[in-house]
Image (tube, rainbow, N blue to C red):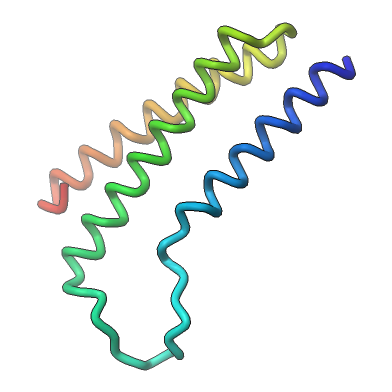
Length: 102
């Protein structure tokens, strides 16, 4: 039980660090100020690419949990991560293609 808790805590910590490390949406520009962010299409493409990359990272972490998890709950959580993030990436790609921002 203690090993599962520590592993789950480590996975959650790794996910939090990964999510925060790639946060490019944060700016120090005051509201209403103009910047050089580019066109909306460029920002959308960048956002989609970031989301797909992060989703792929979640899938890889889920597979790792499935392979290395010593507890059935951890392996099941890994399977859920793989399933949900694969579906989300597929849906995002479909919507991005539909709007021409892929």
